[in-house]
Amino acid sequence: MGATLGSGTFEVPRTEAGACTECRVGYKAPRPESGVDYWLDIVYRLKEDKPYALRGFEAGRYQFALPAAAPVRAAAARSAVVSRTERSVTLTAGSVTATVDAATGYLSGYAVRGCELMRSPLVPNFWRASTDNDRRGWRTRERMGAWRTMPERLKLESLNAADGAVTAVVCGGGVRLALRYRLAADGELAVSYDLRIADTLPEPLRIGLQALWSGELDRYVYCGRGPGENYADRKEGSLFGVYSGSTADFSPAYIYPQECGNRCDVHYLQLGGKGGGVVFAGRQPLCVSVWPCTQEALDAAEHTHEIVRLDDAWLVNVDCAQAGVGGTDSWSVKSRPSEAYRLLEKHYGYEFVIAPAGTPADAARTSRRVAYKNE
View 1 (cartoon, rainbow, N blue to C red):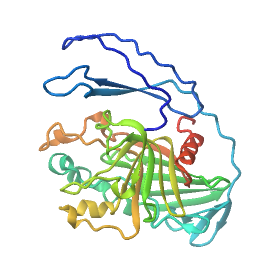
View 2 (cartoon, helix red, strand yellow; view 1 turned 180 degrees about the vertical axis):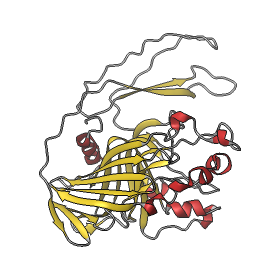
View 3 (tube, one colour; view 1 turned 60 degrees about the vertical axis):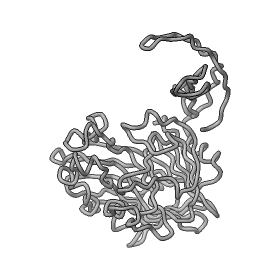
View 4 (cartoon, rainbow, N blue to C red; view 1 turned 30 degrees about the vertical axis):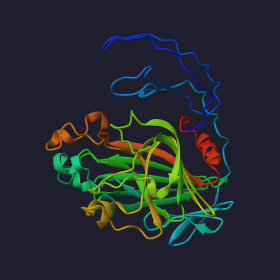
């Protein structure tokens, strides 16, 4: 859950059902450090035994964001060395080499000290494996199925390399997507995403990028909401903190396979293993998930044992946003999320950094440097 700076208790007077009581919470406010978030966790426990629970039972909790200091604006980094061939554009800085496919405009390689960590290109993703509500009530394949195959219709319109950065523009099907990759001298690769959607298109289910990464990255650490999966309309009960575990346990297995494992408001996700790893850190909170299979395999299977698992790779989603789960009912269009949790805009943009992994503390420092609050 991150570093605990202090803790204590306070008494709440007896309060009848439906009534309110004011309490003074005695705590010492931290002196804000630049680029660090602080939270006050309030936990409510029973003072005495009840028929339904014993004294000390946690009856509820809430988390309050505390004032934070503005992040320090990072100094401009030196540009990477750019080299170009007919097949690719390569950015090199220190121990990191990033490769962009000249035919597609997508990031196709990220190597640290000569070790390639990517197993497939970083490609756009506007879809999700259908949830029960998507399938039965919202009927997303019928209403917005164009987004399922949209990445296949996107074709490279332009590719430019200058000043240590590569900018690619892909278009098709009423979509224009500009991707910019800039490699800093310290090996941090900034990926910028700018999407324009035609008015004639229905809403997408997801705005993001996904790629396969090395199966040797068998441990995760992330800073965001957790510890379990959460979604835009299912996250208030998921507390903000630092969580870690085995990559194999990142996403749950549903009896009927479907979208799963998302984490909201993520500042950074680190995947590591023997010999290093990779960090994804957002300039704004991200949605992330890690699967042992492709999205297509997840969407095609009807039972858990039918999922075709990847061989020595993890699929990682690094998203700007995803539609909520919905569920007012499960048999009509009312099963879709409320408007606040749907992707109804026609312009989306976000940015994140891919960096070599070190310790969890290094990942936190990377996140602070990226400073999602600092625009």
